[in-house]
Length: 411
Image 1 (cartoon, rainbow, N blue to C red):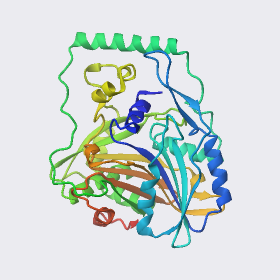
Image 2: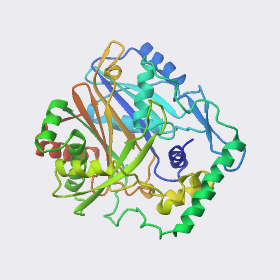
Image 3: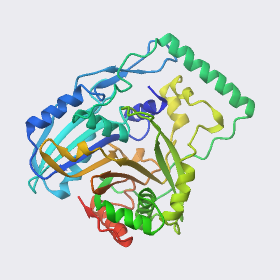
């Protein structure tokens, strides 16, 4: 397992913000249950069908082993309205266990308009956003090379020797250079009282891709920099008081299509006067650097010390005021489930069973993907004091997209 894998495994155990990845498909008609059973079976035998195995030697990394156990295919009997759709989807992340039980779930429900909603939800320890897309693409019949994380690792003794060697050499070098003071903790600033009830709220907007690209180009930006500007502006419209918003930007670092957590983080600062053009320049520079451990301490240290120590050292790493994750263009295979045309596909993260005490520094997360002729913007608010409901988030998002000339519509 990688350092990033283990960070997300710790969040599953309550050491940090719980995170699950989710793909959503809306279809124009009812999906055949037999087809969903075929997809469920393919996912079960695919790269998501694995679990964490503990090492027998101190210092060796945890590894992956095959696991064909899976949660049963969930078919909700209640017919969902559009206003209930995301509440249902948000609830699909409970009881995922990447270590001792199935770490993913496939669910479906009928919609009042005659269509269906399909949700694939998995622990972030198993995959990042792009990896979830690859896993579904493979399950729907697109061939891929064998993915990492499903075979046996090197011997525990050899791996432990490697890990300790990296940690000891790297730590000694950092000490010789002088360990800097710990950076300021990335905790939440004081805020209004948090109301009772859910602490996260979701919204999904869909917009014609030619229109999104035109607005971005007109302002000297790109689809990605317009995305970042929109997420920042939505947060300001919610009443966020600071004139500068710090944004964390995940970077896909995979060289080949592997189903794992192959990502790094970078960051930019967005100010109220920024445009997609100025954000484009900032992001271009940011993508050439990464957020690293302070003082050059090797990140492998997090894999050889107890989990609570590792959490204390890495707590809040990569968290900023907003998260803007551009998942990119989705494969054409995801535009239909068998004969059933998809009217919308979204990819996002959710936070199962998150409590007010666990709220991270992040106030608003945005996820962008392109599917066919549409961009789909998924938003998750983690600021219940300022965004009190899903309806409030949806209204803020529509107000913001309209203000820049986009005719987006909400799911």
